[in-house]
Structure formats: C-alpha cells, structure tokens
Image (cartoon, rainbow, N blue to C red; front, side, top):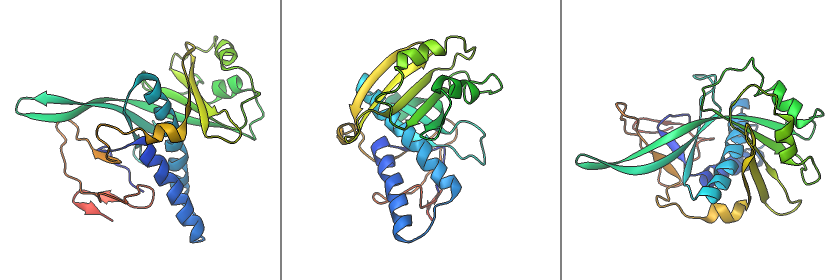
Amino acid sequence: MTYDKHIWFNPSYLLHCGFEAAKEADKAGAKLSGDTVKAINESRATCLWALGTNKLYGNELLVQMVNPHEEDTPDTRVLHSQMRQLKTKEVMWGHYLDVEVVTYGEHSSEPLDDFLKRTKLAMTKAYQADTIILCYINRDIVAGKLWKDIHADLADVKSKLETFLIGKVHPTKPEYASAQVHPAYDNMVQFNVLEEARRKYKNNKGVQIINLPGDEIKIEIPERGFNPFTHSVTAGGTK
C-alpha cells in the first residue's frame, strides 16, 4: 500500500487500480490485507463521487487515501487543484476536503436515516468542520425511499456536516446518482461511470505529486503501471 500526503490520483485511474489489485490477488489465490480492502472500498466510493461532482461542476478533482495508522480521520481526501504563478514559477495549488466514507450494504436492516444518525452523524463523532460525509449505498436503490425524503428524515440531526449519498441506479448499466441530503438537499447528479472516466483532465497523469507549502519533497514513481494498492513509494523510488 501507498499512503502519502503528496500523492494524488485521477479518480478514473484509482478506480482502475482498485479493480486490478483485486483481480491480481484473486488470480494468484491470495488475499489482500484488511487495510488494503478498506482503502480500495473507501477510495472507490470517493472516486465515484468525484466523477459525479466533476460532471456537475466541470471540476477535475483528485483523490487521496489517508493512512489509518497515522490519522484517525478522514478516510480519504479530494483536491481541487489549479496552477498559480508564484514569482518566477508556476506551481500546482489547491484546496482539499476531508471525506468520511460509510457503506450502507445489502445486509443493513435499519432505515438509511437511522443508519446515518447512528454512525457518521452521531453527536459522539468529532470531525473537522469542513468534512464531507459520504454514504455509499451498496444495494439496489431503484425502488428505495426517495433521497429528498431522507433529507427530511435528517432534519433533526444537529450535525451540520455536508452529507452525500451515492449509489448505482441501474441494474445492468454503470449508472450512478449522487446528491447532498444534509443539511440541504442539493447537488443531484446522475452519470455513467465509464463516460465520465473517459473525460480527459488538462493534466491527464493518473498520479500527480503535489507538494505542500514548506514541505517540498521529490518522489519518483513509474510513469505507467504504478498501483498504490500493491506497491509502496518512498522519496527517491518505489518498493
């Protein structure tokens, strides 16, 4: 696994890496570690949400996994980057948001609003003020409760963290939908994952190194074939 605060990924590339890591492990008759499976699942939900947000606003969001052994929260981060001229050189600049991911699976029996109130929106949880709560619905939602009704059911929640739902809305096609359901109902978008994944970024690299102010380091990664779920990267090379 690779966790590094300087490394960001194109969401379509990171989705591909997650599927490839699982396929390689299955082919070898091996099992991925628990941390790796968790990182793949959380990053997958975040990448899907990023692709939908890109379509909605014309963004080019990047995604990063967060090392659970170094930070309790968040699970992932998303970055909206841009180039800025600083004195004599142009540098990559951006603003990132923390993302807490929770999965509402096919075996979840409680109503979705109660599930959210018990988990990420519980008052016992403490997150940064600008953290996004992202609930991935890993079950058939075509005939489920309307998301605007979920919004109404969350009206009494004291937490004001922006909360989004995302899930597959077609039984055979890779069609997904996402919407904010708390504290407002907004940002509804439906999209085809394959179509959005084909959209090229201005900087079309799958992996980007973005240094932080006052913390510039040089990391060398392969131009092609680097999979953060199966390889690790250190300053100066890969392992």
